[in-house]
Image (cartoon, rainbow, N blue to C red; front, side, top):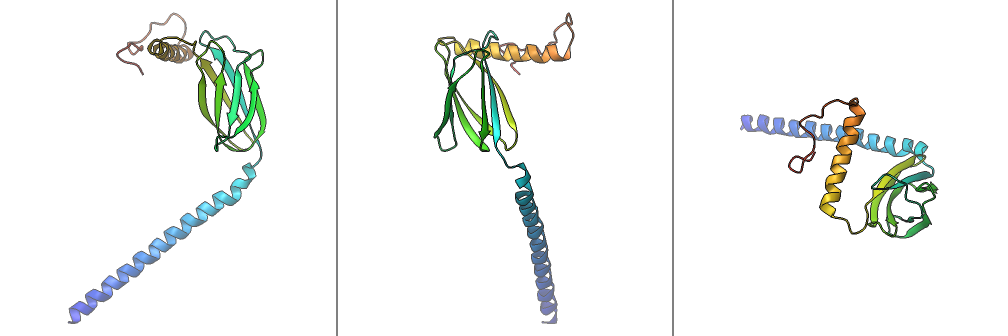
Length: 171
């Protein structure tokens, strides 16, 4: 019976030690979360959104209708892109927004963007022509992306590597 008592006492000590350890970890994590909440206030303030809209050929798309909806799907702003395909919105609350883009002759786009406090979210969108082949458009986008990446890291006239995208090995 003395053996059981020592065993029980050892189990209780282990349980108490684990409880204390869990409490310390919880306290540390709680303080970390409070620190991030309290000290992140320095980043509060309005944010901004800057959009540049291009067609597939790279030219700006002026006069495209832009609708900005908040995370509750309420219309916050509606406007059009300027002559250079730009749309800008200042004084926005931080959060996620849905950006709806419509222009006659192009496929409509809906994009979710996040706006951070005291920061400008910059976005470039490429609109596809309406009635185009979606598979061909997707392959063209993959190829264009690969060409941009290749051109940024290699000089003109260098041979393209064997990992160039094909219908069978898109990146």
